[in-house]
Amino acid sequence: MENIINKVLVVYFSKYGSTKKYAKWIAEELSGDIYSINNFKENILNNYGVIIIGSGLYAGNIRGINIIIKNYEILKSKKIVLFTCGLADYDKIENINSINKRLEKKIPKNIKDTIKIYYLRGGINYKKLSLKHKIMMGLLKMVTMKKGLKKINEEDKEFIETYGQKIDFTDKNNIKGIIEYCKK
Image (cartoon, rainbow, N blue to C red; front, side, top):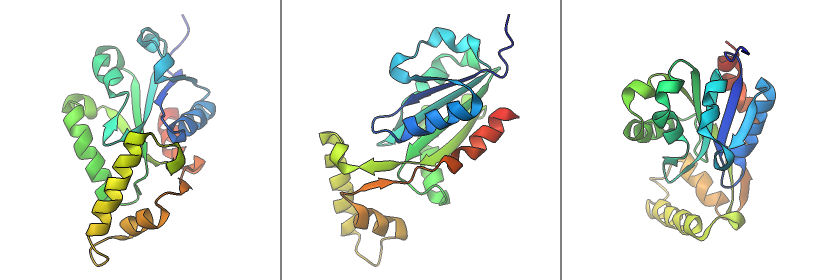
């Protein structure tokens, strides 16, 4: 039987493309197999020693978490990585704390403590958004603008200034931490 300890599986959910871009870069760097969550079969998890799940953030929801929770008995002896992809600037601790609070509600602590989590900055193309996401972003802009100029932070200003445009914060350098961790 082949040694699976270093075999890498990357499973991703990407609605607009940023997470898919990161997943491809990670799979290439680690010579891993890659599947969209829509084409993925859980019965292959036993064939890998490193499991990487990536998802965009959609109103705080992260697709793929259930793969980890449902299959944790199989995965707990493996290296598990979860990466999220969103618009927030993850150099700011308050953004990481906000996502961590959401994750704590979705992932039991005993499982979360065994997962290495990374936050990667994605992009947005307002022309490609679904109607639901267009409405959500429009509401977010209205709420942000109601704060008033004295109460908004730099990230809010950036959001207002770039609203409606195509913005891409993806950067291959952002995956360095994931690559290093998986190669250890």
